[in-house]
Length: 420
Image 1 (cartoon, rainbow, N blue to C red):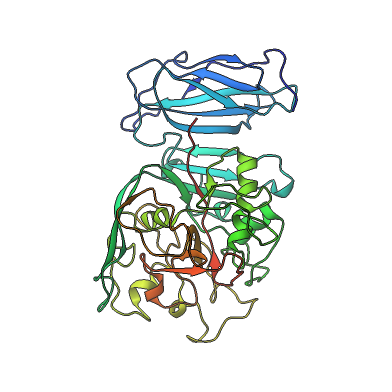
Image 2 (cartoon, rainbow, N blue to C red; image 1 turned 90 degrees about the vertical axis):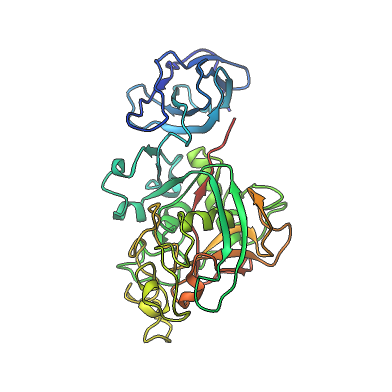
């Protein structure tokens, strides 16, 4: 790695004035400043020495001062006032420029309510540009357009909180309670949509899915990908140690490539608790539409929120669709059904979504759980196109072998903003 011997250019921190956002205080351009380089290729600066408790920043780089394409080097939330922050930065070019973009005193990660990762450069791209949007209204074109199901991974910020996780006796007649309280202390981004076939193809250079109709495959969720391929060894084997012992991912896995090309080391699958918290979006019902089920097989309430066996999944209710079927059967185009209150689609049905956790018993009251230390396979949530309504509810959980490529299994991307 080439080390910078002299100052190139590092601007004073650029402060984003987040007008209208509760709890955000904009500062002067000199509130943040670059202190120094050191011999280890680190960028150092000090946060504003104010009464603000939380400073959130993003370090960006570009090869030109007039570049429109600033790439994210690192994103960090919740840094105290007057704090010296040190960031490792890439030094593989003689003409690289850095800037710090920051806001302060927010209860949430203030880079924006949405994060968009541009993967249009595909496997040959050296980086994937990351853009943040403050509100849904700021997302170009609206959240449910084709670009966010093909060339851009759009993610929604979910603020931390406490919720009651698990089965409820009200989910449908005759079921039982199996509940515990979970507290999540960290905000996290999660995909607005399940990762699609085109998105997998751009990142990994492969088309593994069963439903391969040439005219409509791109915006269907990717399936027939395993837990190992998503985050561990793309040759479909484990790395050691792996989750929950460590959050390490393989460099050639889907998550490994996203981490390397965005500079965001928080990319991974969601934990099971993060998944259910995001799916429910504050609801306590079987479905995140605020409704419970009256039938565990075919239920009109399920029809509105996701693709399952009885609204197009199977042909005639029982016949498995052909590989080249249109989206009338099998998987649906991402975002074809109602979003939940937090703007997330397809949390019910379409494909089962893999989570980080090993499949085992629920814990009791817990904070930031990582699941069991050992278990049978990995957790899947949300049900799928071939399953009945009972399996698609918010609380239902199952397990899959980590090396299993299954025509019912897909996933959503998650990203936890990382600290210094």
